[in-house]
Image (cartoon, rainbow, N blue to C red; front, side, top):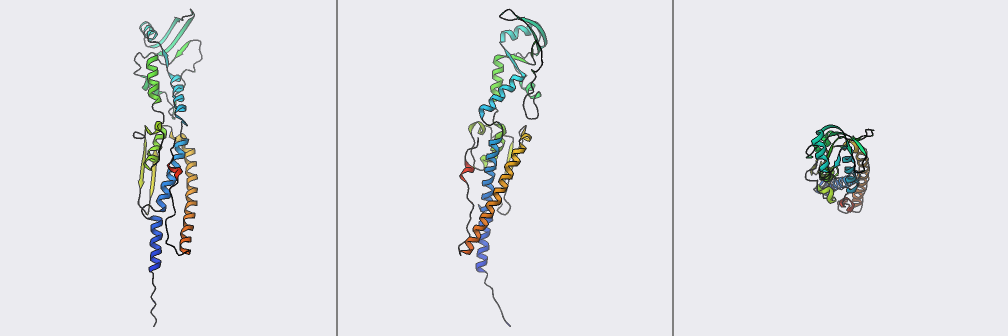
Length: 268
């Protein structure tokens, strides 16, 4: 009768080294997931409209111009007192002596109703319908306010520029990324969510964006995800090859994944 004893000490050491390298706290799997998530978010934030703050504010100016008309307060009060504040059909004489027929649907002397009117006349992307397309020799306007109220409301809406990006930035900053100030100012109140499970065996990252119009961005979000999936596949392949090299050279199996500097760079 023969008794054979197998010493598995070295094998167990290798198994524990491999497990720690792959799934230990801060191991290669979680490092890759976090790093690639930052790179995914950085790309998506860059592609999410608007490209720049100036571009977004210019779009706001155009949208506001599709709905509202500003006039001086003296004229606003005069027309309102003589013809009422809705469905105005009247003639006025300009400074040059020419006669102009007014077709104003509504006058708002205080500007208090502008927000409700604006929200009621937006499409699924949050952009304003062009209500001034009516072809007429009349001076047509769906909504008339004072120059002061128009400027005040326009600046208020301009201050919202960057909210769509900020819903992604909520996750990006939670992972250590940085964004420009015009996006970062909205992060706390952004319509986004970030959930991160650091379970070493089943790490997961969930990023949610619920801002109006986000459905229009699905094409580039999916494209960015496909790119990152392919990169993750290549990185894991290289890491496993590195483990094999450690074993072949009689070295301790060490972690191979590193955070890339690019993933921490500021996103627009």
